[in-house]
Image 1 (tube, rainbow, N blue to C red):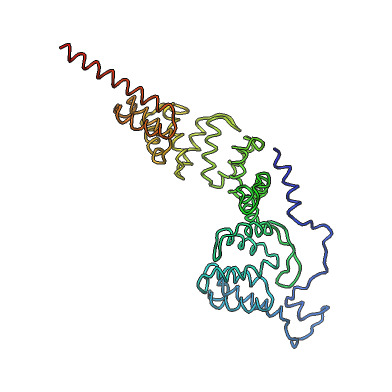
Image 2: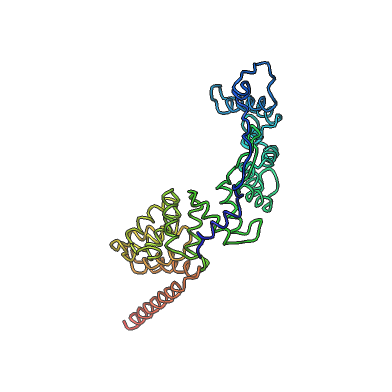
Length: 383
């Protein structure tokens, strides 16, 4: 499936067209525009407008919040943001939402944070809409409501027109984080009907903007399917981009693709290099596959002792093939002392998890044991 060709269509669907949009120059209300009309000084006797007062309060609040030119003081910032909000400055509502959300200058209050975000969201603030989506999705200060979360993420993902602090209309671009969360909800059917096509398109839109989690997720769909989405070469490219941003799960998948030659050339040496990076994240499958490489001598000399260590680590995550190969190592005495009893124990664990070969090994060891016992009895009787 050519996801890329569909992305352009989807962008057009989720974003407003800016063609034909125009408005008269909106006055920012800065110093020169306030006191000099048509290049003529009008004097300082004119009373400031409500908007000018609110913007002054917002600027001072930001200085207290960030500690720019003033000592950082969240309490003073909080009071000034409230005054600016009462004077119609939407940015102050969003800042108040953040302060209540994270407990800056006051105790954490998700309920109050939600209320301030909601006021800002009504002005088409994508950041406020996104935070509302997160609060609805994860139940912060309110019951989980996936349908509401979906709708907020959908709004936040789109380009919108809102009014800035000077009451000028301006375009606000959709948030890549919202596009990613929206993709997840389509992917898993959270708050909406499951739609892998939309999920893939949204993941790719976010991936192309450099979001590493989206790069990994679109690679997973292209790597593992369903069949109509399979594109191993493209999956390899997205895994590489995600790995370059330190997504260690992507390193594991790059190792798989090099081990089996999918989407790229087969190269056991490169597979090992990727697996070694992936084990830093304690990915059990990477440890198991490193065990395979050393046990069978793929890209490295056969070394049952090293393989044993990797299989032991992977077995702690209850991977069936790790149990099975530990059984083989004890049965054959490769790198450890031969011990059929211990081998049988590992084979039994593997068999309980569905490894058919392990069941055969248990029978083989049992038959050998019976033959040895019969032969010992025969010799004892003969003597």
